[in-house]
Image (cartoon, rainbow, N blue to C red; front, side, top):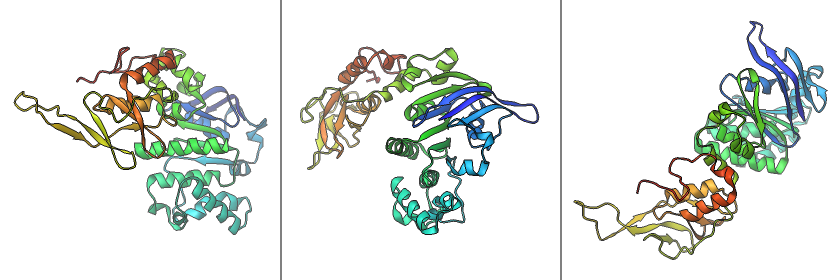
Length: 372
């Protein structure tokens, strides 16, 4: 457990970075620091491993004041992940991951064995071990960075905007990987981001900060979205915070209708294994103002998994569907049924009022409008 007890940082030129922070980071959970640029998020994070020394107050790690601990030994017991991974360019991946175990005195064979285990854990192929960082994609480098942070099995991970330098698709995959790892390993994670959507997705506890590291609100994601502490917090969360709240609600309770029946004039087509291949329905584009008597095929199908995805994913699927129905699939991608938009919206109402705290554009109490 980490506890900040009046921790503050004033730079030699008199600039105040963090003012008297009192905060507890619970053990085995993910705490996310979020706030505008320059509010002190990274300074707070680096106080824990003494890369920044507080000018007053204390930072306690399992009851011990970190200022009284040997800095090098302290850092070797803490996993640290930063933007763009921070890998050693002249070392192969396997040796990058083995860095901390080797510093702790592990022999080369044991350290490399641990590195190979972690490559598998973070979803990288074994042949990645012999490559250099410049031979990897940005997402692969970030996975190696996470593996290196986990190498000595530290109880605490510090993560400073680790996924901000990669594209949105890779970022979502890395977030999924972190969630999977955390469910398996139960580390204490202190995570910094400027992205409230990332904070809501990853955090068990979210700390919204103001200027100089002052705490505006500490809450779990659902409480934060449903009940912002004040107008400033609400503004930071965004006008679509109700839509963000859907990402906290499972999509398991949406009633499905048979996929083989036409809906809204459209029929879902599937392959021989029962996986969706497209939609067939009436052509919508008239010629000289006269509707054409022919069918249109749309190959893209947006899907969701009831047991794994959220109401937000189901709603996205329904909005993107030409038939105004989400396509539910199992883990193997086989069709389970169709969820009409009305059924998805009914599930939103049944989930509780905090999923609808702010009407999002295109969503009404009676349905979803898309201009059609």
